[in-house]
Every structure is written in structure tokens, then in C-alpha cells.
Length: 397
Image (cartoon, rainbow, N blue to C red; front, side, top):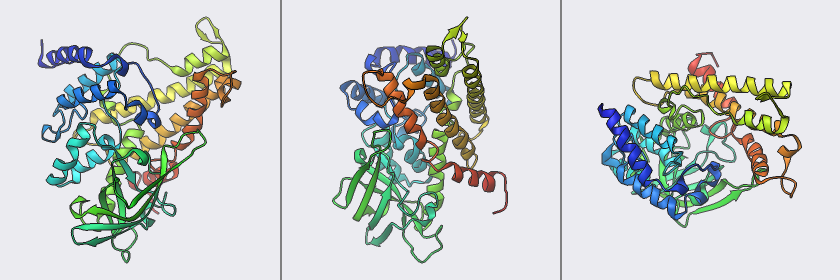
């Protein structure tokens, strides 16, 4: 038995023995993650995975990670999917600020912040967008003034996902108001549990409030929590967005997808058969069948492309500007998938409340409404197309 096969056998045995049944074969939208991960079973699962470093399996062991090579991390991912185990922890710490600190952080910053991400005890939010600086992010006006060993921050951030549950924020702030707008911006980390931070959730058409307004009134960020150079935070901020878009676009973890001869499941096919009828194992309605087929082919091609790009990456790092391609295509596929599912369900796909609808149908309606946001957060479709035109295709302004 090879070393990798031995690792697989040991991993399979450990997961079977240590993953609580309540953390298997479950699904929830990311907006519900905080509530779902507040249970005793979730705490137990998080603690057990953190002890092995498997919350962040490829991060260095000195920061609380597992130190696994790519092949071993892929095995872990595959074995977790085999028993349908939920991740032990989720959030922006793992997907966004953690990778950014690994690339740009000082050793002191890594030692201070990464272990708390690796054990799942600290949650993060993103302080980027402002009321007057969304797609044109470089127009941000939140001001940070250096005062001794700390920055004093004043301004407003908006669409701060999960801010009401976050312990820390990573933020872009203006530290030189006289510089050109892409200059004079710094990247800082600040504690959310301080008097100068006020949070107001924003209600969405889906009925949830995952996004917030965040007001910073003389909030404090330590000087040693400046990531990168003073007034050079735009470079750090852009790189973090590439990590974010990699996750939204399906690049993150694509290399760990197990190649299988089994026919992949297709929720749209199941929905179409349930609501449009089934004849000889096929979707009965021809128009519905063609729509599902077209979307399924596009989705499959997208996932195979993401896996190929991940496998061809020799550095193992998240790609640069090309992540915008995957964010753009992935976001559109996600939105059209929810739209098509609602269409296939007919009247049952537009229920908001009432006895005439099942819990699943009411949930799907909210997910359809929520999908309108996927082409906006992480950078709008228009922003992604601009990046692709300029940074990938090299077209003139």
C-alpha cells in the first residue's frame, strides 16, 4: 500500500469515528452559517478538526494548519465528501484574509491572527464598499489617521457581509487624502468589539439580513495591524479580491474534485421531472428538457475548466486577473440555475408563504431572490468584464 493510500485509509477511519452525524448530509445557505455553526455538534466537530490542523489543511503547521501537500489535501476533501461531512469552519478568515496574510503579512501578524482562523474561534468581515464607493472602490473616503501606535478611523462601510457576527474586520482606508485615488489607500485590520463600531443589518428582498452598514467613529486599528506598506494597500486589497473571486467562481478547491465515472447528480433534472413530468426516465416537456440540457452542459464545461486550470497551476497559488473570468461565468451560471429552477416549478416556484407551498418550495423562492446578489458581490459583472478586458485581453482603456 502506498503512503497516499495509507493516508486515505487512516483519514477515512478517523472521519467516520469523529465527524458527528449532525454535521453530515446537511445543506444551508451561507447566510445561515452563523446559526448553523452555533450548535454543540458543530463546536465538537470544529475542535476535533482544529486539533489535526484540518480546518486549514494546506496552511503551515506553525500557524495551526495541517501542512498537507496538495495530493493529501485532495484525499481529505474527497473523504469528507464521501460521508457528506460539512466543513468544520467557514468564512472570510479561511477564504480571504488568511491567504492574504500568508502572502503579505508580517511574521508577527501571521502568528497573532492565523491560529485563531485555523481553530475557527474568530470570524471576519470585509470593510471595502462604501455608499459612494462600490464598483469604483478606489473612490473610498473612510479616513485613517496615524496617531502614535494606532490609526484613528472615521467613515462608513456598506454591504459588510456578516458584520453583526464578526470579531474582526479587514478594511481599505484612506491614509493620504491628497494622493491619487488608487494611491494613499492602506489595508488595516481592526477589532469589531470596540465602542467606535456601530452595525446596522440591511434587509434584502429574500427576507434575510446578511449584509450590514458599518459606521466607524474614532475606531482604532493598531499600527502593527497595517498589512503591507502605508499608502500601498491597493495592491493588497486587489489580491484579496482575487482570493474572494476564486471562491465564488469555483476555482477554490477545484483541484481537489475527485474524478469519477459515476454520473453526477443534477438537481435541475430532478426538479424538472417532479414539476414538468417524466416519460421513460426523461423530462417529459421538450422545452424544459432543452433548457435543462443547455444549462447542464454549460455548468459541466465550466467545472471541468476550473479543475483543469487548478491542476495546471504549478505554483499552487490562486491565479491573478483571470479569476475574474471564473467569477463572471460562475456568477451567471448560479443566477440562471436558480431562475430556471423557479421557472420549472411554475406557480410553486414563486411562493413566499402559505399552506399551499412546501418548506422546500418556500426555501427555493428565497434562494431565487437571493441569487440576484451573486452577480454583484465580490465585484459586479461589469467590474469583472473591465478587468478581463484590461488585465487579461490587454485591450486599451
